Image (cartoon, each protein chain N blue to C red):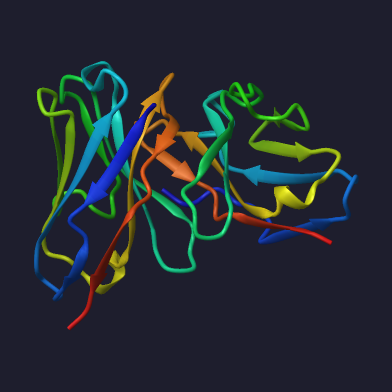
Length: 118
Length: 110
């Protein structure tokens, strides 16, 4: 069965960096586009990035463009979100999701919590 | 890109029907049939309920239906059940090659 497992969340100071990973299994990872989506505590969903199966093209939300970088390793079936210059407003649960039929998220991970605080 | 507009909350009694609206612009909902709906019970990850405006993935009950008119998409849940209580989010592809979610709607089954 399809599984997406995020890791790497934790507490980081403002201005710091964090690297999130998403381990995929149960499907041919290299056949699918992937996305990162986050949810601040008590708030709604926010789409962050979208990476094609070949890692080009890549799209970002305005809120993270230039600070966050998404990448993938098809050989390892893994997705990565490198987050730099973190701000308090980046505090959220971060989900990775499989993209299906163009911009549809059919499977989601359980999420990993990132807290940005001094 | 501003979030799509959803009502903060809706409610209904078991067996009734409720409709959740999702209003965007001509740059997203109004121009593309790439509108999806997600259900998120408390403390869990979202689950896909509707895609491409009105298509139900396998396993989603036919009590859930979607539609669109102009810049507004809608999710209708008929024959409400207690298990339907959750937050619901719409999403749409945009002309900027991005995706935007709605602010979310909390469904309470009375």
